[in-house]
Length: 116
Image 1 (tube, rainbow, N blue to C red):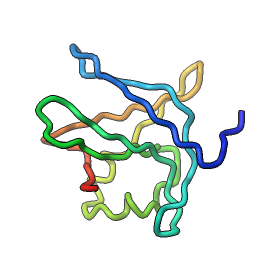
Image 2 (cartoon, rainbow, N blue to C red; image 1 turned 180 degrees about the horizontal axis):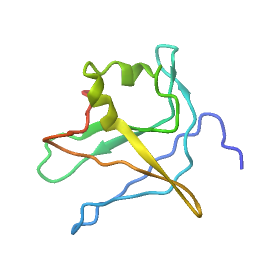
Image 3 (tube, rainbow, N blue to C red; image 1 turned 30 degrees about the vertical axis):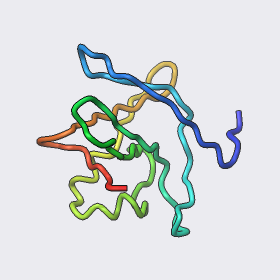
Image 4 (tube, one colour; image 1 turned 180 degrees about the vertical axis):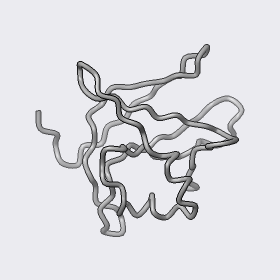
């Protein structure tokens, strides 16, 4: 069906304690108008909280099959190679598309987190 303009979904996911994996089902968002009047590529805002993290970590999940080239938030990341840590990889399945997005809290390939 058609998604209502201005729809804002919200959800909570807990990771599997043994594997650290997580997942959710949702409608893939469309492009949105940012506060500065520029269009933002389709994305999902994520807030990560966990024991041992003193403040919530804010990041975004973008989709590799979308045109992310003019997204103002993605382009604000100084180191271009770090932008890739925010892009979910698409896999086609019998029931539709799935996207894999790994969140790394530190070390090689650490996910970009935003100070907001």
